[in-house]
Image (cartoon, rainbow, N blue to C red; front, top):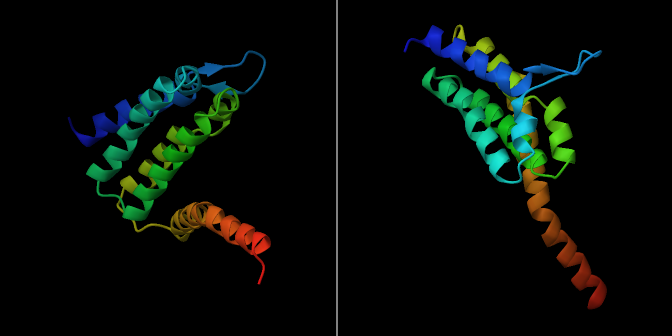
Length: 151
């Protein structure tokens, strides 16, 4: 399958996952992602696997690694937030990771361009946030020990 047809298939997948339905009387659109995600655990995993099709295409098109990382992080945010019951399903209506990823694919795929400063800042910000979350329990334990056993 050539790249153009693959992109059209992915555009249709992105539309189905993020924008297939409209809430009557509003401009609010949502797709199958929050509907599938309503099924605990299995739905979130299935939606994430479908979302990865766009990321895999980005890899095949040799998009910059920072852009691919940003796409993976968009999908990871969708999965993590989506795994929270009810709140995650509502968030899926607004955090359209597939639309974000497809926009990145189109922007960087037409002519492979280097990652933008925004792409790099996004990736760096997420990495710093993950590090902060990983270090927070250690800092809390240190402070607890200092309070319990002062010098």
